[in-house]
Image (cartoon, rainbow, N blue to C red; front, side):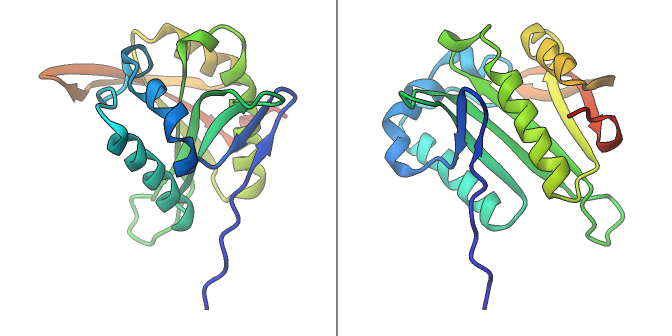
Length: 189
């Protein structure tokens, strides 16, 4: 008999980080269809509701398989959807199945940029990862021209390790990506 999964809902002073469900599709679609949201990501804007339901299903699968978590970021009080934050575990390359690395990702609807929401959500997610999992290293892979995201990661305490040259290909163009990391021992509560 398998253990029932309980989704880790997280709270901050202003935010609720919770599981995305099919009931959220109507508020998620405009976000994921927004070119500004995915400008520096290796995905295209959502073309239809199926693209959004695929994102929700992906989140459900990684949570069920215990290979990560996808949270929707909502405001306390009015429950406005702001964006998403996630982490996905990355197995070590030693073929023994140990997992001590994860990659973090996030995006925010442009109307909410510049208000500290990703820093607030990111800090809470880091706390969750380092206190509730065996993850020792968290990586963030960011387009080198995404200055907003690079500043957020620096504020959270991530360190820049280098450039992944021509790491992503989108619409026929190769992109250099910056690799930033946070180690458990470097994390400041």
